[in-house]
Length: 173
Image (cartoon, rainbow, N blue to C red; front, side, top):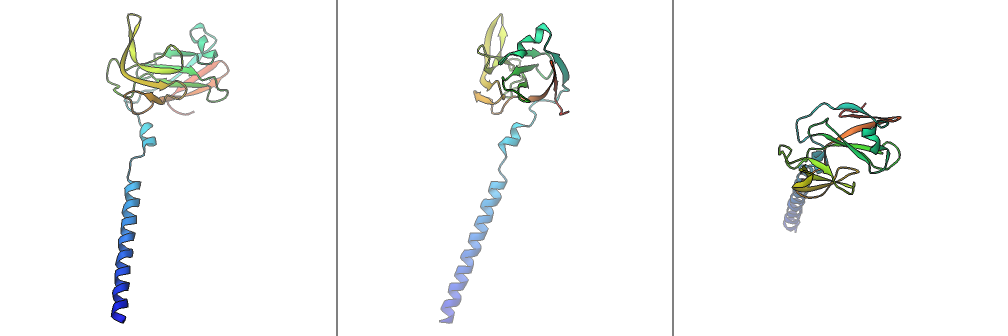
C-alpha cells in the first residue's frame, strides 16, 4: 500500500511541477510581447527641433479661433498642422507633424486636411488637385489612424496657449 501511495505522490508531484512550469512559460510569453501603445509613441523619423509661437490675432492664424479650424506651419519634419478641436481647456489645440507614418521618406507621404476638416489624409496637392498617396486617414482631434496602410498615429507636438498666442514645441515646458 505504501508503494502505491508513494507512486501516486510522485505522479502528483510531477504533474504539479509540469503545471507550474507551463504556467511560468505562459506568463513569460505574455510579458515578452511588444507593447503596441509604447510602439506608437516612438519617433518614425529623425527628431527635429520644434519651438515656435502662433499669434491667433494675425489673419494667417484667424482660423484657429473656430472649432475645426486649422493652419499649416512650415516647422517640423514635413510641416505641422495646428488644429482647434473645439474642446475647452488644455486639449483645445493639437499639433501634428505632416509626415505620414507609413513611409516618411516618400515625397508623396504628407498629410493634408480633408475638406470636411475632420480627418487628415495622406497625399499631396498637385495643380490644385489632391493626389492620394498610401490611403491612410487620421482623426483630426487625436491623430489616430482611422484607415489605410499606416499602423500608428501621427507624431504629436505639445501646444500651450497663452492668451491669443499658441506655443508649439516638441518638449514639455
